[in-house]
Amino acid sequence: MLTIGFARRFTSYKRADLIFLNLERLLKISEKGKIQIIYSGKAHPKDTPGKDIIKKIVEMTKTVNDNIKVIFLKNYCIELALKLVSGVDIWLNTPLRPREASGTSGMKAAHNGVINFSILDGWWIEGHIEGVTGWSIGPKPVESSLIPINDATDAEDLYYKLENLILPMYYHDRSQWIKVMKNSISKIAYYFNTNHMMRRYVTEAYLR
Image (cartoon, rainbow, N blue to C red; front, side, top):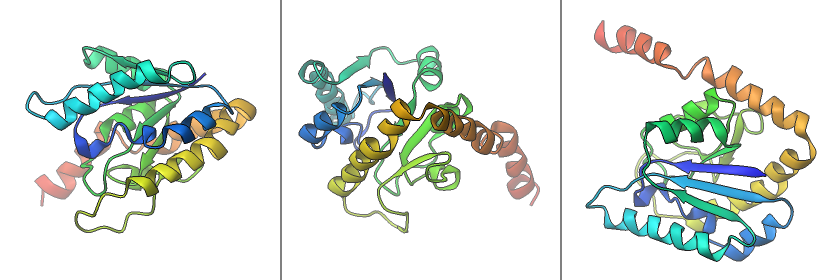
């Protein structure tokens, strides 16, 4: 079953619930191929909107499980994160642009051959090659400052690619799916790693 993972800090700008924006549309898409979504993460104790999103997703697990399997795993920790970034098929990331500083969970997922499906923000602007290393969500990044929220546009692109690109490839073109998994490792993992990061810090910051 196509397994989508979403695990990180829960706060409003990360839009963990974006995939449920048009629930009727999502349920129709799930008729073309089974989908399960695994969530995990924590909100800051004083981040009430972030905690409300977790509550919304927990309620969603009771609403859609006849059609789409949704689960929220409690007690998020390093060990659980490791299982998720190495065990799902798709790593979903839906932040509001341009608020994503980096996106290290997506890098870790790529090292394990997990395919990223993400808003073009943070590291994914550099790591993304459409249909080769994964898929983008929403328009190209052109912002230099904060922009108005446009959930509908981003959700529409998410639904279109999930229905017409991701599900057909996963269920009907396994060799191509594996090729994208391999691309995720060969074209991303060699570049987005700690050795590369430290080398750039030393040569471009510390020694200047």
